Length: 571
Ligand code: GLY
Image (cartoon, rainbow, N blue to C red):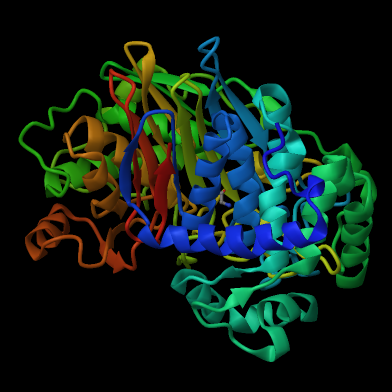
C-alpha cells in the first residue's frame, strides 16, 4: 500500500493534495487532546502535528512500529529543538506477535579521531563551550540508522511512505507553535552564530512568530533521498559528503569513515520487578534502566499508604534512593563495549545494603562521598514518544540532540541540526556536564565509544500483559521523572492525566540538592524537607511525560504532559 500516493498523481493534483491536506492536518491539530482513549492504536507525543501523522499511519493500516518511524522523522521537521536526523536515541519495544521485549541502541558515537583531551587546553583545563557548541561537540548521528533498523525488523508499510509526510512538511512548511517560537527566541544568539543555521530558522534575519510558517527545503531534499535510497543516502551518499565538508569547515572530527561505520545495536533491556510489575528499560550505554531500577527497588519495601506524591516523607525517601543511584551512575556506568559495567547493581542484597543507609526524616550527605560542583541546568531538551497498538506492539522511543537545537550547527545543504552529545561524556574527571552530572573513567571519551545517557524509554507488563509505556526528556531528570511517573500511577493510584501533570522533584547525588518544580509544592512541604536537612531549590518545570496505559480489556489510554503542548492521538 502506498500511504501517500503522490507520485502516481498528476502534478496539478499533487499540488492540490499538498495545499489541502497539509493545512487540514495542521488545523486538525488545533483540538489537541492531552488525554484520549483509542482501540486500534494510540500515540502520545510532544508535537500535535507528529501525533496526527501517527494517527494517519494507523488509519492506513500501519502498526505501532510504522507509526514510531513516521513520527520520528516528523519530529525532525516540526520539533527541531530535539527531534532529529543529526542525533540519536533509544527504543524499548515489545513485539506483540512473540511477546519479546528488546532494546534498540541508536546512540551517537565518538568519532574515531576523538581523544580524552579533545575538550581541554594545553594546561589541561576544559575549554568553555567546546563540548556543547559547534561541530566538535557532535557525535556520529544514529537516528536514521536506528529508525531504519526498527522498520526493517518490525515495520509493515513501505519505508518510503513513512517518510513522505515529513518531507512534505519540510518542503511546504508548517505553522510554528508558541513553544518553538519561544525556543528559537531563547537560543537566538547561538543559533545565529552559524549562517547555515540562521538562514533556516531566522529567514532574512527575522525572528519567526508563532503562527508563521517554517520552510526547510534542504531538509525536505534530505528526507526525500532517505525515503528513496534508505539510510545509505545518509551514511554513504550525498548527506555523508555534506557532513564531511561541514566538519572540515567548522573544525569537527566526524569523517566519512565514521559515518560508514555506524551501526545500531539490539540489546537486552534492563529488566526488574517492582511490586507485581515487570519493568523493562534501557541498558547501558544508558544509565536510565539501572538507575531507575535502583531507585524503585530501594523504595519497594516502604509502605506509602499514609503518603501522597507531595508528602515530604516520601520526597525524602525518594531523594535518598536517587542520591545513591546517581552516585553509582557516576562510578559504574559507561558504554559496555569499552567499560565493564559491574554485575549486581540491581542485586537485592546490594540494594538492601544501600537502603540500610537511609535514615527516615534525616537527609544523607553527598559531600561525604565526593565534593560536588556548581550546576548549570539547561532547559528541557530531548523528546520522548510512546506508541501502542491493539496487537500488543509497544514502542517507547526517547531521542535527542542533547541541548535544545543540539550544537546549533546545521549541516549546510542537508538542512538538519547536529547534536552536541559529546558533552554527555565525562570530558574531564569530576567536571560537570550541562546537567551537572560528573563522571570519570567509565565514561571518558574514547574513539567509537557511546557516551553515557540518562534516557529511559520504559515498558511495563502486568500479569504478562501490556500495562504502561512511559518516558520523558530532561537530561539527568529523565530518570527521576520516569520513576515518579511509575510510582504516581501504580503506588499513588493517580489517573494517567494526573500522573503526567503531577509536580516533580529531583535529586542526583551531586549537587546535594532537591530540585522542586516551582509552584508545585506547599510551603509546609519545603519547610519540612529543610528541617530534615535537605537543601532545596525551586526551578522551572521539567520533564515532558508521554504515556500510554493499557487496561485489561485492551483499551489504550494516552496522556501527554500539559507542560509542553503535546497531544495524544490514535484510532
Ligand atoms: N543527552 C541526554 C541524555 O542522553 O541523557
